[in-house]
Image (cartoon, helix red, strand yellow):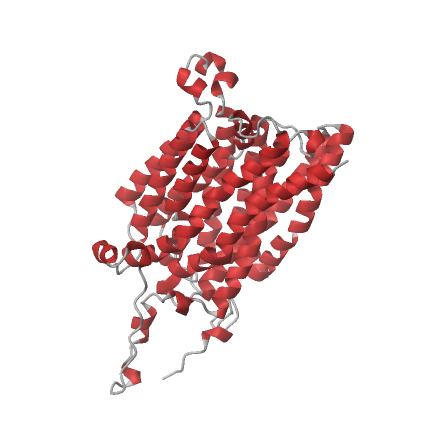
Amino acid sequence: MIALQDDEETPFLQQSEQPTAIDKTPLPWDQFWIILFLQLSDPLSSQTLAPFIPQLIRDIGVTHGDESQVGHYVGILQSSYYAAHALTVFHWSQLSDQIGRKPVLLAALLAISISMFSFGLSTTFLGLVVSRVICGAFNGSSGVIKSMVIDITDETNMPSAYGYVPIPWMIGTIAGPLIGGSLSRPADGFPDIFGRSELLTTYPYLLPCSISGVFASIAFLVTYFHLKESVPTRAPLWELIKGGFFRLSYPKFRQPSSNVDPGETNPEEVQSKPLSLRALMTPKVSTVTAIYATTDLFHIAFSTVLPVFYATPIELGGLSLDPPRIGVILAASGVAHGIFQIVFYARLHDYFGAKAIHVAGVSSGIPIVVLFPVINALARAYGIGLAVWLFVAVQLALMTSLIMCYPCLALFVKAAAPNRASVGANQWNHISCLFAGARIIGPASASFDFLLFDAARP
């Protein structure tokens, strides 16, 4: 009997000794297209809000006319979502390992739909925060979807599957900013069509929010009727509720007794059971946690500051752009990011490997940050002209390299998982620790740093 190698000493994504020619398993498109479709709800909702949130903060009067405080409240609003997300996401992932992925996805889609309608009807900062908290607390879809992709693929077609995963994010980052930028305050932008609507005049941001909410509702119906469960064995929900819904723990492996031959233990049975949180916290998982958190901290910070930077007056360090123009820029960025990943990611992965792609992406963070003051200095000196747009394009192009880190990180997570049954819990183990903290700290701290930078300018 061959002894199992100690997994703690195995490097990430180690190449095993296999024949060079391996037949790739075809992707299960009958379910994979549904996963891609429902994944669109998350980026569509968040990107719909991005272009108009700075203007919304001004309109509700929470800053009392102090333009320098807009970024501060934008950061708080974004962090409220991730704070609620951090408190619940690990439990949702544990639950998906126990009762299946599908019920968790349905709960997430319902939460997105309700929260978007609530956000559009909110007229106070507290109402906006509550809407985002509801969405964050019940939206465990992103990690569960990644786990579901792993469930239905194998090592031969997983890189190809993750090459398609950016498609929903590309569509969401294109359609979302266009919807949010062009349809916010529709009574002012399209007076002939919406000028007589008292509802849209009273709630000027309801229309773009309702479009995202309706799409999430459609995704809910598609998931309910057509998506098949990918977890083979599931525990009854009633038993989990009786044991404490959010205190569920994975069953401990039964150790063989002294009078049982260890050779009779079935390795496949052990590998089919999810591990406890303590068992999941291996050195590999801890390393992936730190890598994922560091990468996501910068990405979330940049994504939060970017629309604030565009909307802030030039004299305060920004570019003085309105929501429609911000939406067009973010949409064009989404097109570039998505096409590059679809066309080049699988090839780059096969040639360079996940580690090299990730290192290159993280390294792009330095010039991305440096370009903020450079772009503003050009705007101050020459106005919004060709030079400014050229450097904006360079900054967004560098962002493509950073975004390509995420498919690599998903592969790191798969490699770090102690067994296949713990993919869901392991996927969000790192998120519930440093990753969740990064997403809470990132938006608020980045916006605050942006304010300090503006205040320090002469």
